[in-house]
Length: 186
Image (cartoon, rainbow, N blue to C red; front, side, top):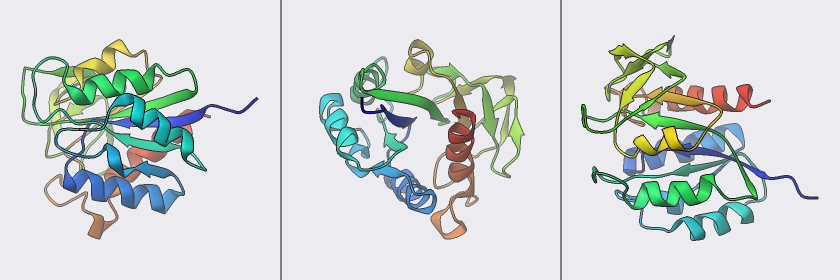
């Protein structure tokens, strides 16, 4: 019996996020489904499942983005399909903060600020500690609460965070979030 592919869901898919996620995947020997990037995500959940199952190794990093759409958009619909597929094992999610304050939010188990520090508080899109414990405001995040995931890590805007998560600096916050999810899934 073939083992299920391990998957990490990431709630961002713009160009900066794509570059950072691709970089981190290469750095740690994981796979990134680049076709899942976009603002918004345009590939369907069914297509993503096929691509994930074709990857030779895991974990597989998959991006989802709704481009600020209210309620469930394309990215969240695709995420639901991937998260509920019987041949995939979602080991966690990276919830990315955005400036959509008080519209969409999700609970997070832990956050990583732009300085690489773990915190029980949420963070904002700049990676600065927010005021609420265990909550992050963002786009494409409210669905995470419905998916019964083992670990949700909150971060600022991937590939940015006031220049602290750029590929040129090694995307350290994104890398730390991915590594934390992998470590805690063992």
